[in-house]
Length: 79
Image (cartoon, rainbow, N blue to C red; front, side, top):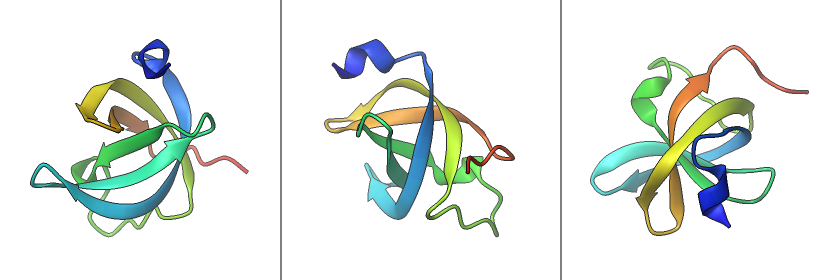
């Protein structure tokens, strides 16, 4: 099921910060309840994206249970 979303741009909700494979990510899920991880460095250092929705491009698996987000549209929150 997850494979069909690789390469697509999806709305994601950021929920928390998590360490995966020794790196820090902001993690959350898509509207289809897929677990996604966004590298923390894609955000401004002072930005706290928790509870906000963004568009993110899914580029593959990070590790089991997590899809990696390689690009994010920072200024496009959804209401």
